[in-house]
Length: 67
Image 1 (cartoon, rainbow, N blue to C red):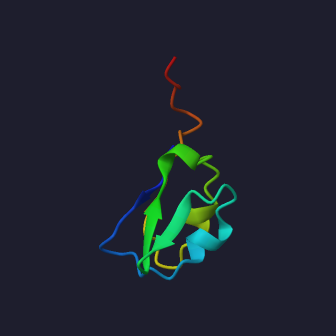
Image 2: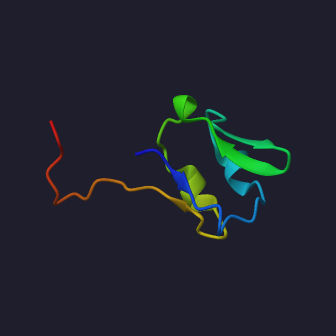
C-alpha cells in the first residue's frame, strides 16, 4: 500500500527520504513529498520515521485479499 504522510505530525526531518530505495520520497523547499509512481511499497519510510507520521495499511494476514 502507498504510504500516507500525516503533515500535521511530520517534522520534515528527512529520515524517510534517506531510506527510500527508489527515491520516491523527496525533499523540496524543506518539505517531504511522495512521488507515488516511484513508490515500491517497501515500508522502510514508515519504519524509519521518528515522529510516526507515515502510515502504511499493509493487508492483515487473516483478512482476505481482493482479487
